[in-house]
Amino acid sequence: MSRNARQRRIIELIKELDIETQEELVSLLQESGYNVTQATVSRDIKDLGIIKSLSSGGSYKYSLVENARPNTMGKFGTMFRQAVVAINRAGNLIVIRTVTGTGGTVGAFVDSMNYENVLGSIAGDDTILIVCDSESHAEKVKLQLESNLE
Image 1: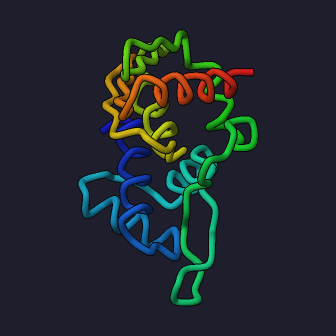
Image 2: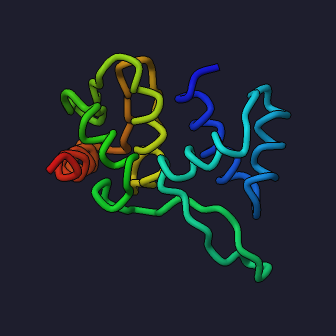
Image 3: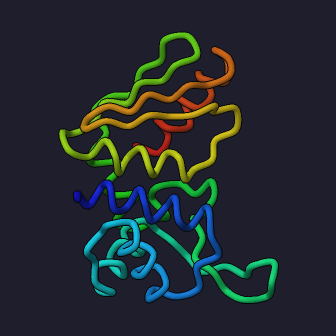
């Protein structure tokens, strides 16, 4: 399975579960069919800009940086700026074109931004489709995404 698919799964797991250690994340990924090592997961955590935050139970868990700008997210932010070819809007839809093979990772990054009024997104090999709840909100999200390219 690809790095993009693995990183999407890491984001899904972190959103769904309170994961406290890399070993726990490795185990969950292996249960999901990914043959990974702790070193690979460590690199993915760094690339995705994942941090540890205090959980409601008082322990520390892995979390996505909410609403962070890509230039504050290390390699993942750099990848976003290098991978995006174009951002276009049609009505309440936004289409992001990327370098071939980076659509999944860029899509995971966009999902981690938790933009308001985004109903959902779909990522392919070189294209991400984002569905917003209105044309005006789509324009706002498009402008926010474009500002991340600076």
